[in-house]
Structure formats: structure tokens, C-alpha cells
Length: 231
Image (cartoon, rainbow, N blue to C red; front, side):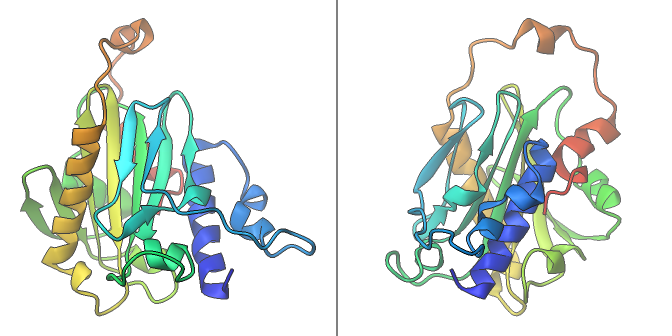
């Protein structure tokens, strides 16, 4: 694994661990891969991944795969990262495409999705623009993207939508100067969200616990998506 991929994996794993509270940063595959005596083999990138006991199916557009080392899934939520198949496979497969990192975070939905203004406020940044697309309403955030990976642009796209009983948050990060920082990035997230909607099977009914639980305040919903360390 190259140093740049190690940094990307470490960042992704740290985010996933914090989102789901299911591991610690020292347990991440990215960190372990550089440990003395660790295996140098890399898992094969996935075309699709099932989260939340198979209820949510995540996949990327053509040329983009799921990083299997990023996957985290429980009965309540999940996390997956999408990137170039060519990069994830160290050049062994997949066409050359624009480099990008997309994260998908799933949690329980209780009262709709937060607005883009709410997301920007929670991230303590400015909302530069909004786009209302066919499958998603997305917003371009002014800062925060620089933490995703080395060379990533501070500006990035975010959105959230409710699918059946799940709240799905998506974020897109791209290198400085990439066309995906602009309108193409918004369209990319729209494609990802549309694929999630099309491939995920809705549950027949919410559990009694979900249907009888009180409505969460806005800050709780935001926390489930972003406050625990999601990129």
C-alpha cells in the first residue's frame, strides 16, 4: 500500500470508527497494513456493498468502487467509502476516472433530514450554493474538505435524504482544481443517491421501538450524520 493510500485508508477508518463507535483508530486496517509482519495483500474493491443488514445498498457510478476496508455496518447504521476502482486496486483494474472520495453514512431516521443550512451550521462553515437535483438536494460547503486527504479542496458537497426508516448522509471530496468541486460534483452525488434509492429494498414496517420513540431534536439528527467524526 502506498503512503498516499495509507493516509486515505487511515482517515476513512478513523471516520467510520467514530461514526459507528464500533472500533478504535488503532484497529483500522489502514494502520495495521504498515505494521511489521502484516500482510501486504489488499482486498478487492467492491462494485456494491450492503449496509444495515442488507437494507441499504451502496454502489458507485461506472469506474468507481467501494473500498472494502472502509465498510462498517450494524443493525442501526453503516458507513462506506467510494473511490476510483483503478486507484483502489493499485492500477490492476478499472478505467482512469477523475479521483474523488465519496462517503455514505447511514443512521436511523426519526423526523426527516436536516436542511443544508443546518448541515453547514453544524459544520461551522458557510453554505456557498445549493442545487436541487432529481434524487437529492445538495449543498457546497466552504470548508472542511481539506481534512479528507492530502491535496483535497476545502470546498466539498454534502447532502442527506431519508430512505424508508434510514437517514442517509453523503459527502464528496475532490482534489484542488478538480471539476468535481463544481457542478459535476453535485451531479456525482445525485447519481450515488439515485443508485442507493433504486437498489435498496424498503422495509415493510418500522420496528416498534422506532415508531414509538419520541422525535429527536435537530442536533441529535445532525450528530448521527456528522458530529462523531464523519469526513
